[in-house]
Length: 138
Length: 138
DNA sequence: CTGTATCCCACTCGATACTG
DNA sequence: CAGTATCGAGTGGGATACAG
Image 1 (cartoon, helix red, strand yellow):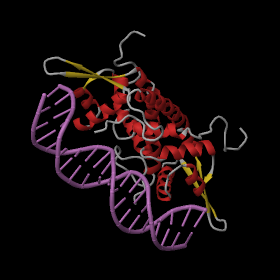
Image 2: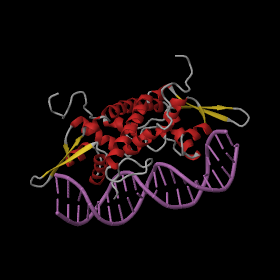
Image 3: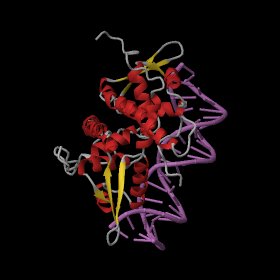
Image 4: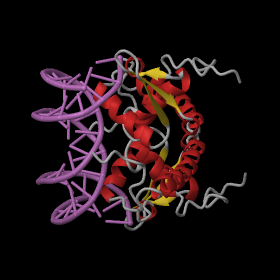
């Protein structure tokens, strides 16, 4: 480990940043990664079940987000022509390729909450939960 | 590998989803992960250098995003009292804990672009670049 | 049950002009 | 050079009502 931080090898982000843009564009928003996480962890779910597990999401949002995920082949939608129709959503094998990343993000986020909480508690004390992620108060 | 997808062990996302929320809340937006990626790959950078490397970002946005990243201890800001002041930004050791995830996202995004492009080309042909990530056209 | 259609506000982000 | 201030368009996402 010399010292040099610059230009470490095998990391020419030239043109690669597009990958990051694409991934973030797709995963942007409050809900998509959560939906993916739930489907990864809990398996196949019906619409209403999903809405219960993804805390706080509205039907409108759940619909929209699922459509995007399906269009991007991360989620498979299956309609069962039962009495009143029921619909199953499940993660696709391709969607599973995001599982690791999502789980790492989850763990990182948990650690980050602890870190920011304890760093912030020394100054002002927050009532646990909620906003987190230090923000410039403008 | 049986078949069962449901409730695979060690993945009780109960309460853990908060981690995902926190992480996504922090990383939300067009620019933050890109800035992180650049600082990880290219090392310490001055403000204007960063603005050049993060293609398309405005000074206003770069400032704001860097402030958030600094508040969250992912980036360190150093002012050098030179002739006209110069400022150095660099990723912190803590910020480095995101490097793996960011790089994985980058790779995944590159693969996703290929996948969606070829899937979509069969239908309508796009002029490469740009929007990507299949979207319901409303 | 599984959505869709509207309405609407808050916020994100870009453009532009200005400052120490 | 490294920002800050202001304005404005566009969008994300909640609430509500309705539909197959």
